[in-house]
Image (cartoon, rainbow, N blue to C red; front, side, top):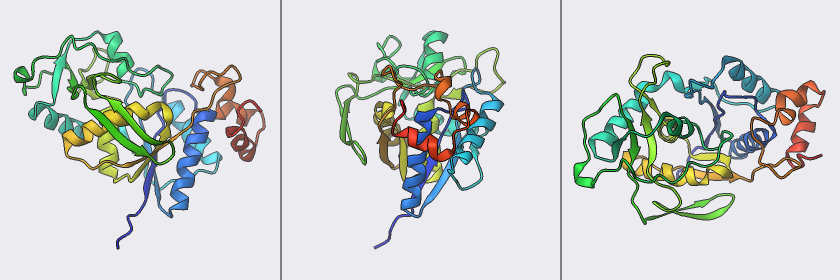
Length: 284
């Protein structure tokens, strides 16, 4: 019987300094790959042109290496892979899986980010732009944003390797979600950008990822991504969602928690082992 080679990934976004919660998740990803004698890849998720900064790219690479987390080169950079995402989007458009949306820039600014990036989960879309199925157009309009039409009422189920059985109802727990947005006036000239959901699915498939390790705040994103994988004819990876860390006020850690940033803890003189100890006791 053939044993599948384990391939995992680290997927930070350079929109701020990595904090203790990132350390916990990425250390788990590193340990999972090592336990399976597998491969661990590094993906720079730099598709948010408004917030991504080169200094954060350098910081996240340095901080993870300082913790003792090793990965297999080269580093994959999402902003260099737009053509690949565009091909996947064209398939969704050709099959009538997506439709154009005219929602505001403010709505799109929230939805282009990964849901775990200092924001609440994407709200359930109210369907204001959703056409009847027969009216879905397969002609691309570069001046429009596009959403995936979810199968309302269908329960999306998967078994998480850490948190057990999970289920979410399309149209109730999450709605039609953004997969492509038009280029804004102050961004480089190309025909739009993929959402976090689409880029993540395409990259995981293209890299052959066998297990995705990430925070429990992305459980709904997994349900969304399973629908995208189905629409694109891609296999579904295994998933391992880690518990989230909170500060001493019980607030989930985010990049605004500068005091718990890995870089800040390093500057305070903590060793990698001390930082990893705090992963299990962030208030200590």
